[in-house]
Image 1 (cartoon, protein in one colour):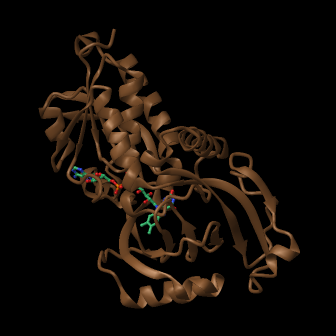
Image 2 (tube, rainbow, N blue to C red; image 1 turned 135 degrees about the vertical axis):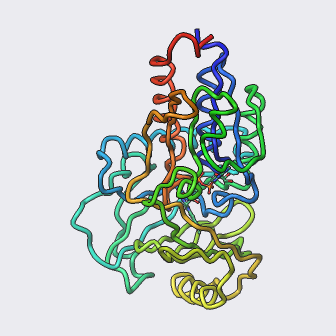
Image 3 (cartoon, rainbow, N blue to C red; image 1 turned 90 degrees about the horizontal axis):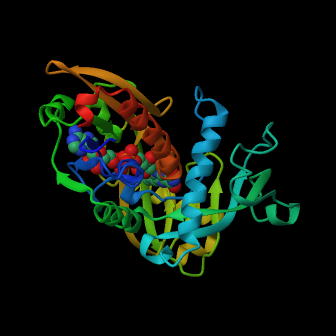
Length: 340
Ligand code: FAD
């Protein structure tokens, strides 16, 4: 029924690739093209620590946020428990989040989605004298430097087309006669769709060699964390709002090493393998919605899926499923001419 419909997905970070795979898998009669100016290993997603964890967005109904988290978690857990785990860079990761204050909320909204959530015992907390409580759980670590090429391969196997190209305006894509445009341009949406609500939150991390570390530790303020991965341990970080600098800041490096060694003293023996900076595509709430844009004399449906801030790896599959639902709605509402 939808044969011949041409869908463009802009963006090849974790959000764009997840969305492209969801759409190509669910709508095999449509032609899906992924367009981006940067691919792995050069996207923001590539350097993300990739731990599945999320804070609340203020204006998105809790049910929807829970669904985003759970859908992503279950999708990645299935990969982590399959033969694809090492190639996809998706592993299970156990550890703790420690908090300086006792929170009013009993359990975070994602407690039911992760595995084995519980509060830390006093004995476990003795190791962190500056912290008053903590949570232990098993989550997922999704390393995008492996996961993105794996997803891209899956997309191509589904018949998807991949084009490296900078899009200066969505009008260009209407000119290329795409019937539906899906915008997953992350921070690029600031200029691409002129969204003044999108802003960068700069993050710097280090990769260190410390194979003896097996459990993650995350300070609840989100600025200090130690995440053991497949080949190295990611330690961080920073959260600098509206800071566009992509250069490594040596002051940040020292501060990260100092803060992380305070939580895990053995890190003084770790060799630094690399330093990396990325800009989180932040927004008060992620934008996952459709709009109709008038372009070159025709109305083109655009599905937006961007603005995931510090939780893009965590929420990518969940929001991709929502974006797929919106693409289906667009197909349903499309005049018959475009479907042929
Ligand atoms: P991106 O990865 O930035 O991809 C955007 C894509 O759009 C790129 O392909 C780009 O080329 C393309 N694009 C943009 N504009 C255009 C244009 N005009 N024309 C063509 N293409 C365009 N999240 C977690 O869930 N867990 C974590 O542990 C975690 N840790 C992080 C640590 C750090 C230090 C940082 C910086 C981020 C971290 N994040 C984490 C956040 C996560 O990295 C982001 O939320 C996620 O990468 C956003 O993905 P995205 O696909 O929206 O954007």
